[in-house]
Image (cartoon, rainbow, N blue to C red):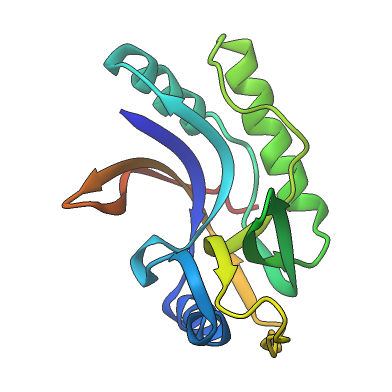
Length: 179
């Protein structure tokens, strides 16, 4: 099973993200757009796991001590890999989000769970492997409204390909502790 730990998003946020994809859809040669149902904020990407490791990860999540908090959408950003781009929406700086990421990462390390451990750049992916149809034509980038999102839980997610489509399924949700 291919797993990651994430914050799921409400419908208002998903709709805003879907609308932000429009300029990219109109001027694309190639690109894989995140579907409405797959929008999320990755906290930790783990990768392939067996049943025993999945149970350990589930136990780790039940030990989280973070309290609910809010996130606010930030600016549009882009990672460039070779000649293709990954466009995303960032988040306003948030110490509680970073502390949650750090807590989960440390607990996974303590239980010897391997995961992608690199600099954490919180973002909501709009489109991967994007290449514009006309590279000489400027794309009019969408303005991102500073929507605020309530974070009350963390989810263990499964990633799989079904009928050649990427599908993310929540397999466990842990509510954050209220003060």
